[in-house]
Length: 498
RNA sequence: GCGUCGUUAGCUCAACUGGUAGAGCAGCGGACUCUUAAUCCGUUGGUUGGGGGUUCGAUUCCCUCACGACGCACCA
Image 1 (cartoon, rainbow, N blue to C red):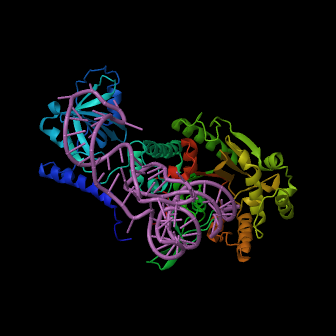
Image 2: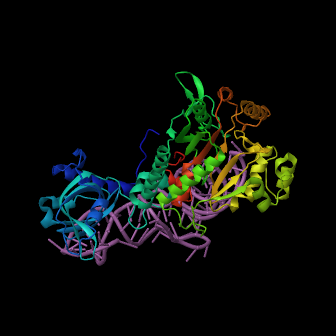
């Protein structure tokens, strides 16, 4: 781990050639690594907008100064060269002519694709109609010593794309665009909530007891306190403590960690938006999530985009609303007793050939049945409402049907995108449900969470009626960007070390 | 954890039932002052993911390990 991995002989040759040019640059007094700052007049996108109307052969009168990474160089003899320059905002062609550059033209021979340069000159339009910068001066700002992937096929090896994401970002522009879009989506969500009076808080990621969901936590340790610690698996319980404390509209957008399987929809750490609002309920959360998601879809231009299965993404209010039991009857032919009764559920699973582990809990069986029969049907945004209480230990019961809770999950493109409920604020009911989980845990169920008894104490001080919601931001970004894998919306997805 | 497929030059890919490991791009040298996958001529570059086995001979067949992709399992 402490040794730099070796490069192959062929690659070493390529690096040597580039180092030779670095030496030559230094010898000519243009050491790129000696430069500190470079004053840009703006970015490439601004230059494109400002010169939109420029006609063929026409030169702009005002010079600009740009900086970025060099794309392919096209040398035309000893006196002319074209290249592409890319910055975060876009790409622009450079035209470098001995007559324009004077002594600086000698530097062109010492450039490689991938170098970082600063250029100054005036925009013009070539006779083929491409906006181009006539370069008057050129400053190397960093030498790229390693060869980049080729210009046609780019970098497609998935392993290398994730391990060396920086190369992926340089070469595969759509990857950069997706990451920038992710940033815009998250900041738009934050702005949306801030504008409506929600207060953003930060709760601990290091917990003595990770609760609020059922998932195995990552384990770590404090040297100072000499105690074991767990990384949080949800922000739920701490955010509700904030509600108890008198914060009426709180949210947190943060990383949570679950020590579970990794697949197309799951990364061990991911970003969750959790929000709690006093004096509202699951209906309020439905309104909020619908409005927020439609808003974010508009920002990202997601509506109308074609998905991989050929369907067209639509984000129009109102989203469909189907009660859990009705959905199970409609698509699975299952009645209430096939679900809410332990034995009935197991029989139903056998009948529908849904595999469940021998020791699976009743809740687990019902969840499997739902996954097998309903989830595959939910392509357009759909709220599944009124969940069984056995699936929802932190949600308030429906007053007219205590076996169900005031909860919804929002499904989009066959994927769970949000989970919300009227928060259980009756400490005695909460204690009873925690106790049931503790009993399961004692019976050997390692999945059952260990109760957070202090949370009961918090409820005993009194928590107002509250609506809460959790939205997996990574999955939402996947849906809005049309990405099929969560790894493609994460800059640095977890990879095994080599 | 299980299964399938994959790993060949810096990158993208070839190499038939086992018979001297090739190409394009990149690089290097040369020609070219509006090219844009620039073009043209020439040319360097390999521990075929690691280890072991079978064989006269292994990129190819077998075993094993590593990593990855996909699926399954796990993830109330």
